[in-house]
Image 1 (spheres, one colour):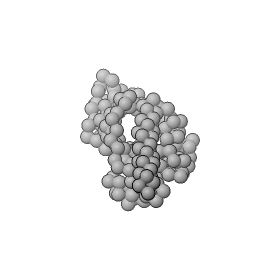
Image 2 (cartoon, rainbow, N blue to C red):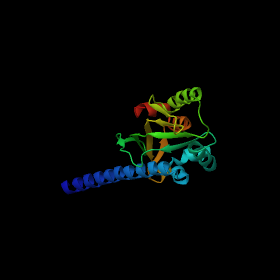
Image 3 (cartoon, rainbow, N blue to C red):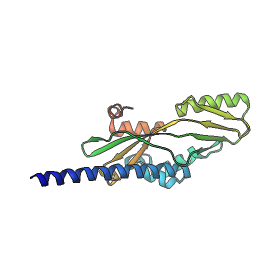
Image 4 (spheres, rainbow, N blue to C red):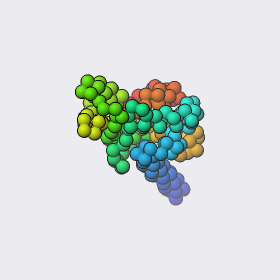
Length: 191
C-alpha cells in the first residue's frame, strides 16, 4: 500500500512538473514569435476557441496590422524577458496560469510627428498600453514604451493538452476571455 501511494505521488508530481516545464517552454515560444513577428506561430499559440470565434484569417490580418500599418511599426525591444508565473488554477478539466513580464516595445511612426502630434500620440500610447512610461525620441520619430504584459495560459481538451494563450494587452482578447470563461474567473486569477 505504501509503495502504491508513493508511486501515485511520484507520477502526480512528475505530470505536474512536466506541465510546468511545458508552460515555460510554450510561453517562451509565444513571446519569441511576437519578437520575430511570426504571425502564423502567434495565431497557432492562441486559445483555439478564440481564434475560431474571430476567424484565423481575420486574426492574422489584425495581428499583422497591429505590428505594422500605414501609421506606425511596432517592435518588441528585447529578444528574451524573464517571466513571472502565477500559480496554476484548476477548474474542472481546465488549468489556467497568469504569466507576467516586463515587455518594452517601440513604435516607429511613418510620418514626422510635430510636437503637438507627439503629445497626442504619447497620450494615446499610455492609454492603450496601460502605462505612464512613454518616451518620445524625436530623432528616431519613435516612442519607447515600457510596459508590463499579462498572458493567461490555458490547457484543456480544446488545446489538445497544450498550453495556449490569451494576450491581455489586447482589449478584444480580454472581452473574449470573459465571454468564454466569465468575468468571475478573471477576478479569481487576480486580474
